[in-house]
Every structure is written in C-alpha cells, then in structure tokens.
Amino acid sequence: MEIINKFLSENEYTHPHGRKLAEKRAVILHWVGVGGQKALSVWDYFEHCCAGKTYASAHYCIDLDGMVYRFIPDDDVAYHCGSSQFDPISKRIYTDWARNIFGKYAEDPKHNSPNNAAIGIEMCVLDADGNFSLETLRAAAELTASLCKTYRIPIERVGTHHLVVGWKDCPRLWTRYPEKFEEFKKEVSALLNK
Ligand SMILES: [Zn+2]
Image 1 (cartoon, rainbow, N blue to C red):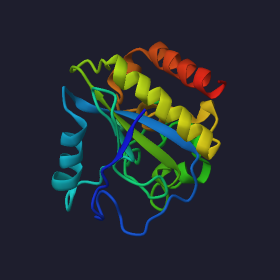
Image 2 (cartoon, rainbow, N blue to C red; image 1 turned 90 degrees about the vertical axis):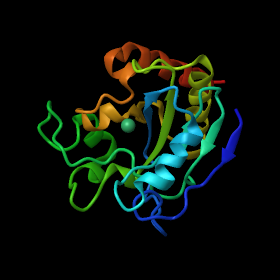
Image 3 (cartoon, rainbow, N blue to C red; image 1 turned 60 degrees about the vertical axis):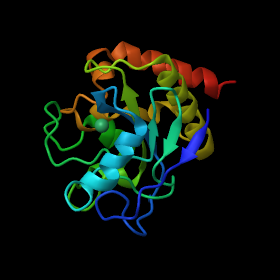
C-alpha cells in the first residue's frame, strides 16, 4: 500500500485550522458516490467546491487503482460522519451503533460530533451501484488494518457512514449487502492477526 500526501488547504469547511481529533475511536468508511470518479477529482471537489459552502472532507481517499491519498493528517478533524437528521430506527440523530462506539461524541449533536473521534476513508467506485475494484478493496483493508494497529482501534469500531447515521446509503454496496461489509472486516481482521 502506497500513501501519497495530498493535503487539503486549511479551510473552515474541509480542514479547519487547529482543530484536532479529541480521540481516535473508530475508522469510518465511505464511498465517493460517483462511479468512475478518481481520487484527485474528489480532492478537487473538497478543495474547490466545499470551501465556503458545505462541510465535507475525509482523511483518506482510495483511488480505483488502489493508490491511497491522505487529504488530512490523522490528528486533524475531517467532516465525514456528522449529521443533523434523525436515524429512522433509533429516532435519534445517531444510531445505537454510533452512540455505543462514540459515547459523548454522538449524544449531543449541537456541541459534539463523531467527527471529533473518527478517521474517515473515502473509497472510489466503479459504478452507480458502488462496486469497488479489487485494488480499492485491498488497499482499504490494508489502510484500515494499519490505522487500527497504530491507534489501537478494535475491529468492532470499524464501521460505515450508514452505521453511524442510519439514513445514508454510504457506502451504497455495503448498505445494500451488509454481508459484503462483514467479508471486508474479516479481511481486515486477518491482516490484524498476521
Ligand atoms: Zn459517507
């Protein structure tokens, strides 16, 4: 796995100046949402389209060829799994899963957010169904395992955006087929046990 640093400029909406993660409790996986979009185009979107408009970013983005780009240093806050809408099942802002993992970071959306305690990984996809290339999947497993090792995050705290907020089909493939996410976690576990 090769990681290229391609940091986003400091900006309130993407890479807020001086805002550090309070803790690293979880690794949260996402899809970029557009079939065929490459990581540098995702970088462009965060860098140029979000600034001044939308809170959105992630620490990493994994390209279709498995190249890993680091958009935001691990210690800084990125905006990838916060919410102001209600989870349809728990009827709270964050799901039971999120409140269990994040505790205070998922209890009071006005003053806190899981973004203060999560590392976010965006994954490029081949098509609108959200299918991943083998290269993207392999690099995502390697990156997730390496973050889990470095920050002592157990596999139970590897989740999807959908698992945090409930209403979002992100990544779409793993929202539709949760068993495929379980397979992914098995691959991460195997790397952790090596
Ligand atoms: Zn997402």
